[in-house]
Length: 383
Image (cartoon, rainbow, N blue to C red):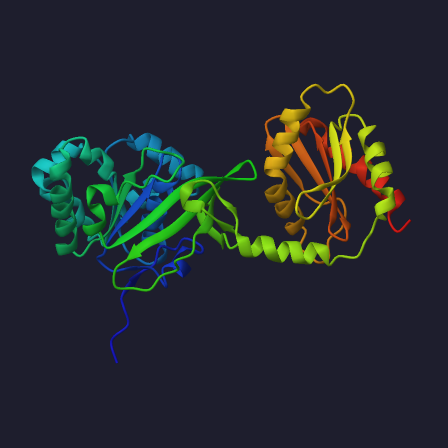
């Protein structure tokens, strides 16, 4: 029987679960993502947790941030880098890419590696190295650096910044770095229900099984943590997520099977009362496929076509997200609220038998309108 693989746990909640216990020891890990996705936070947690939880000293090499700014930002996330430096468990090395390239890592890194007996290192970032060498040399220089770190038994985390924030561009493979490193971790932002959400994925992990699902991550006052997988969505890599077809079908079957709460004969009267509420611009009863059964818009609104297009385009995703968030099949009213655009909020209320009430209001009026619409619906329930 083969010996178990030696792992380097990150100590990041949920992340080691994705990695089946952690990175493989002395492997080179590329953490890729656009600006603001949390690459530096992940790298610092990797080093700080290594020193505090696992007795593995680390070195943080930065080409862009001044030490004082790094200390301040880390402290806001609960990581006291100065304290760890004073204890001889961590070293922050602020240098230039050209100096590292000229020395091949020897002059800049050799002394701190030896003094700390370091076993972990993070380099922020390889993207800055690329500005000092042409495209043909970058792969060879990155390979030379990775070999230097491996020979010294350092488990490395290398940061690569992707220029684009959204869309389907992922440039690591374009420059050949995927062949140099052992593991690739992707961080990116996607828009879901008009909110920016963080997505993490392990695209490659040489020599080890890993979780291939895309999972959500959040950054709080204690750093980065991994949440649940985006099981109900697909298209996350393109930056334009949508509810998976299987989720849509299950939702439709479930909603159609719900018993009627409001009789269909009351739909027109229900919509008419809702439209008389302050702030309600559009109100309709729709079936699970988005077809209008009853309803209309407030008289005097001149932008019916634009408003209707917005509601139609966002209806299905908004409806499913809203109702599913109430944990079917036992949900109460009111159901969910979804922002479609900056000036339109949609309120969704299940009426049973595959029918839902949809009302659009300005976001600032949504809280009071929710209460008032619920009161109107209650008059017609089981009437």
